[in-house]
Image 1 (tube, helix red, strand yellow):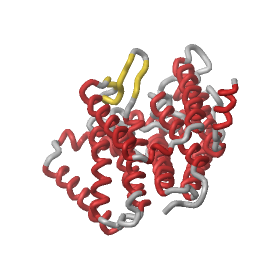
Image 2: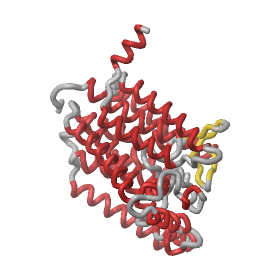
Image 3: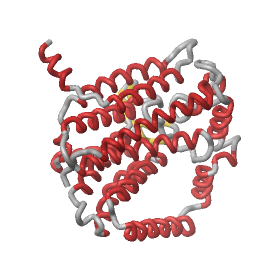
Image 4: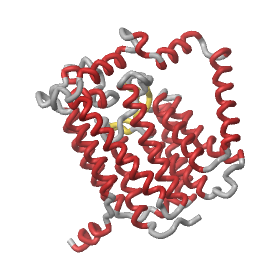
Length: 368
């Protein structure tokens, strides 16, 4: 009991991170509850939330200074890239995407922790080079780290995950102070390569798939069916929603994957515009706290890690909500803390626990 009490005293909760994340998790849990018949997703998600919150508490009690060490980060990066590589050869295929390792009823998606490990790698790289950061080679070297993960995820093919990885790298490059002129050169070069591939490499059927991916609502009876049903579901919620458990579009399964890819639409149907505003306000509070903590962190590494995490959450929220209201392609991006699934929940809560611990264990002025 004494050891348990000592451990409890070491837990450092950042309530401005914990409470919004918990409310988002509970919002997702309530949304996927059918209130009638079997509640497979509700029961399993309840367990994953419990595990994730306990992991958050455990992580917030530890000192994570060892994450700054190259001898720790490089092996982590190698392990996750090897896992992503093995996944392409031996992973479980679901809906045409080879993104999961399966063990019985459990499934693990390594692209979720890969995004956080990439943030840690970039935070380490940029924090050690803040004086000479305007050198072009730092864009290229950091881009090489991101490109490895990007390609391994893109080839699954997980287009949404690849977009998030690119956004993490691009956002952290901008925030690190790298020369905007050099960055513009790299971006223009990438656009020229993409244009050349489109004109001379891609086959007609590949172009058709990309166009249907970008404009899903042009084929509402085929590739755009899910996107169309999602917009109908969001609109049906109107101002105050249909009520908890009364979402006919989602519960009657007119809206596919309402517990994962389209949970924002399912929530909007039951809670309406007012509930959606409250939900997005919780997201903004979480993001504001991440940025605020990063601003006052004591080291550049912690600042960049916090900002990279904020980019990670922001991109997930924007893309998921955007595809649910029909203004972005359907990519299979989860809504942080809300969507069904253990891999992303554990990753997100663990990351918050690490950041809560860093905030406590790194007091004092910034180390330049």
